Amino acid sequence: MKKSLILLISLFMILFTGCGSSDNVGTAYAEVNVEEGITFTLKEDTLKTAGATFVLTNNTEAAANYSAKEYHLEQMKDGQWQEFAGTAQSSWSDETATLEVGESIELSYNWKNFCGATAKGTQYRLIIMVNESPVAVEFTGA
Image 1: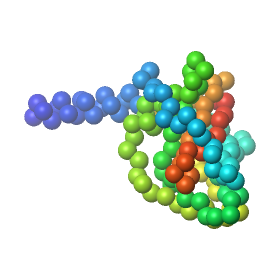
Image 2 (image 1 turned 30 degrees about the horizontal axis):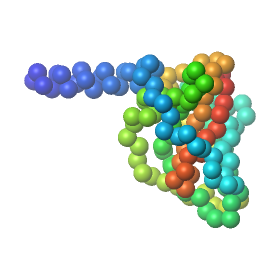
Image 3 (image 1 turned 45 degrees about the vertical axis):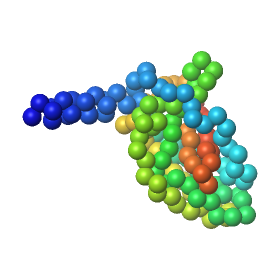
């Protein structure tokens, strides 16, 4: 019983620290947007403090595979990108989807559970994997 209680308390501590903690980690993505012909943009008028909709476009000559669920949210601090602990430490599925040549898709993300709300005027970037390479979009918090 005591072990179960300790395990439960530990689990709650991990869940409630999430992205709002000061335990942000440096970026694992020093080089982004190396996929020629792939664009990732913020859809106009969709940015909220808890999430946004982005547009992924494939202007290459081949279909592109992208992470269907996985994303990483980073914040600019002291001139360096730092990933929120909530997305850095998450166990993402390996689920991928395919974006055909010349197609675009809207992808909506709600980061509040992992990272809390974004702060107005603060620089952020959202990273997804496309063809196993990081593709990022930068934006200023609402």
